[in-house]
Image (cartoon, rainbow, N blue to C red):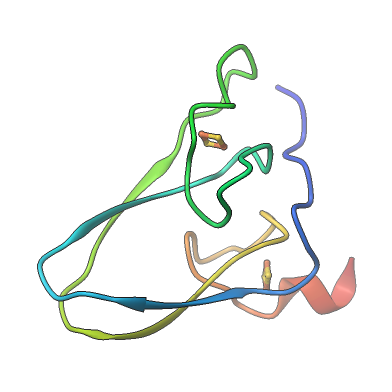
Length: 79
Ligand code: FES
Ligand code: FES
């Protein structure tokens, strides 16, 4: 499987809403980062579901290399 595209070497800060479902782009090709827009078709990669347990700020990984998907774990500083 190909490596995901690095959308940006920094997280995307998003205000999520409690109880709402989000689909994080794992492939890096989406034009609606950090979320999936269907561009992964043909890559063998699929988006990851994120259910917001609370209304709060979430930092979604933009480099697509985090070990704690879908949120940023600081890995982007080493790529
Ligand atoms: Fe990247 Fe869907 S566009 S996972
Ligand atoms: Fe990917 Fe921080 S943006 S680990």
